[in-house]
Image (cartoon, rainbow, N blue to C red; front, side, top):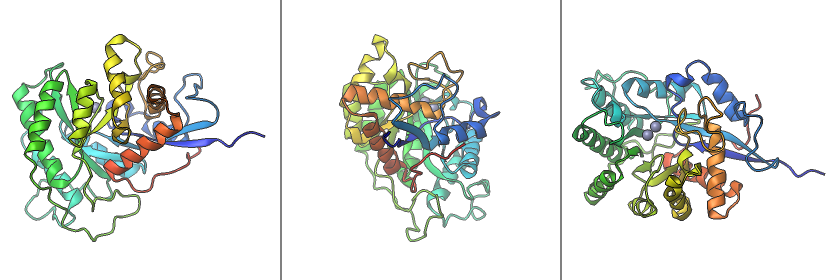
Length: 339
Ligand SMILES: [Zn+2]
Ligand SMILES: [Zn+2]
């Protein structure tokens, strides 16, 4: 007699499914991920035949206004996709006049149904209807690409943090070669803790499969694709942030050892899984997949399980619970949807 298969509902908390890399076959990617079938990589299993991971939810971060609107559209089309709106630091200098204001109004409208799009703000596109907006971002600091002057990046980052505070939506934070700057910015921001405004309509029921935006997120946000030290991991979770772990934590190269150590010591209830798809494919699929896809979060879970001496099932259960808490997801599917 064979043991029953255990389904593992995964959440990819950072998947750029709204980028061109997925434009041609997103329906397939989502359906395959929901069914728990990996992209063509010779049927690799995550642990053994008893576990079957599948995608229960994915958050699509934005890099500019256009991708913000696209993320909203995808969240309307696919029940497992959720949207964020924001401007990536590498796009900070490209943003046009009014882009930020539109994003701001979208986020405000998402948590406060009393905001009248036709009233004082004609700039709000009528695109929130039925969309599942759960976060602000991605935003942050990037000294690696250095596409925008640092002071422009920082000013825009602070605006995102402030918007997160005003709306109670968690902020998706990017940091590349800028962890010390990020540390300073987060400390300043949290020290200056103004009370968070509560949404004005707490009694309005959420439509089915809509995030519970009537309660504010328990955290200011997540530092995604964490690439810092164990000390930074502990400091930032202490400040209330979550940490998103992706491909980096799986890479065997020595220069990623600190990130792995951070994933080992960070509080388990603050850890999220992510892909940063289409980028950062985890080991051992790196170089074998043309692009990264949400389901490979299973390999991140496997690595974190190894590091912490836990089972993959425990890591998936805990990280999915963490994501549901942070983003206030509605009830997530507990079984894969067959193709
Ligand atoms: Zn990023
Ligand atoms: Zn990203």
